[in-house]
Length: 247
Image 1 (cartoon, rainbow, N blue to C red):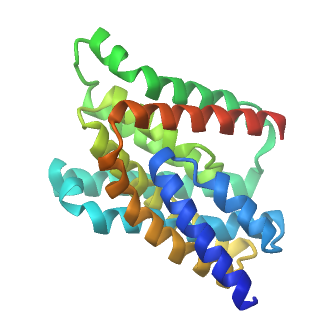
Image 2: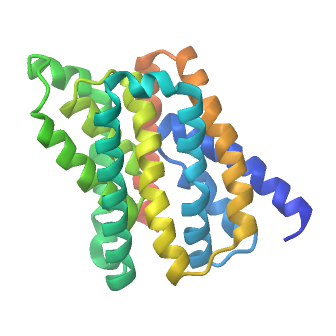
């Protein structure tokens, strides 16, 4: 890989990490960048899965106290479920392919985006009560399985789950989203590496950029009102759903 291409992928990784943290739509930036660097669609998907781990790592280094606010044991449990789901999803993808599931994905992302937008009103209708903890944890497993299987918009779907089924504040849910997706991507990447083509230089370049962008994300979030953040996530989700529906 040429040095110029490597440098451009690092810059694309910074944008990917920043956008991915704030909106959950990392692949909107990373996948086109990988294709522009000359990777085949399969290699681009496998390599970006590896590189996107940097977002969660960057966010964790910036906001570790917030992550641990819910307790170390609970965090480890969620990470374990995210890793398990990532492995299940990746295995299903490798065995059966994406198939007709792609037809459902745009509608799933659209629904999650709208849920993020209206979650404060829905929580008020619930009397600000959280769902039983097992419901939320089961949701983490399901969302991470989707993340390992397809991945597009998984951050938005997790955020909707957290806002509706857990007691975590919006800020902590944003950070957890990135860290849990990183755990999902780690396990999925291991399986993809074993059975798919990886461009290590491209994954490294994207990962370095994602590490920086993911680290900047929590700081930027603190400067943006929560209502604006909800609209950003929702608009990005609707855009991704429309793009996938036309693809």
